[in-house]
Length: 231
Image 1 (cartoon, rainbow, N blue to C red):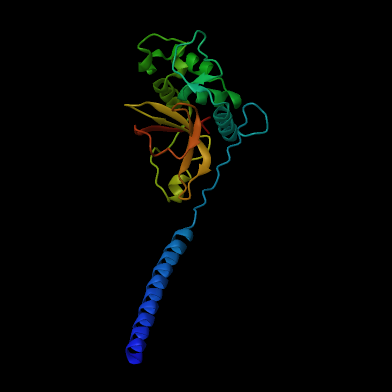
Image 2: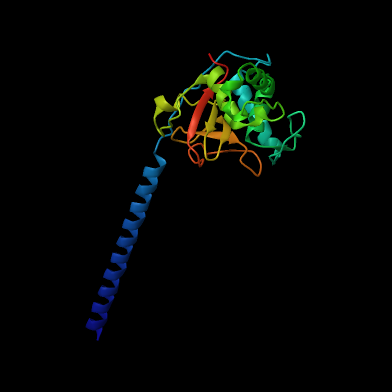
């Protein structure tokens, strides 16, 4: 009986040791995996400095555009698409283009005046107006802004390569990104980035404006990437 009890005790001890070893191996593998995930380095993208300060407030234009777009995010106007006499919606309403012209306003530029003037002088350049200018809405239509920025801003790459320092250095905070058909959209590129260097965007796609990791996720392809003013 004592011999049988001794054998049983040895078997139990072996099973306990095997269980402990299996648990240790699992934990070690999990810890190793965790370490691998944690040691992936974030890439650094050099910030481009363009010495342009339209409103003379001591904040360079690209930074001004970022701050102006963030101010719109903080205001949280409701997404509402409508026609407004005089062109401008109330402060508590807006769409994607309203975030953009409001950001430009904060940097010292009047997008409405600039677009209206160019449409009047070069009507045929703007197919979206269909031969008839409408100052109450033209500056709030993405296809018109695409034409305007192609003419008067620096035209940059539309390709985004996660983890590619050289490519991502071309995407700077304050840039403008435009998406085409079927779902036209426009946004301001943020100076906030993912660990792989891909920038966030500041935009209003409803229900309110936000700053988010969405530059690669919009339904439509990128058809324009601009930096204003042209340098």
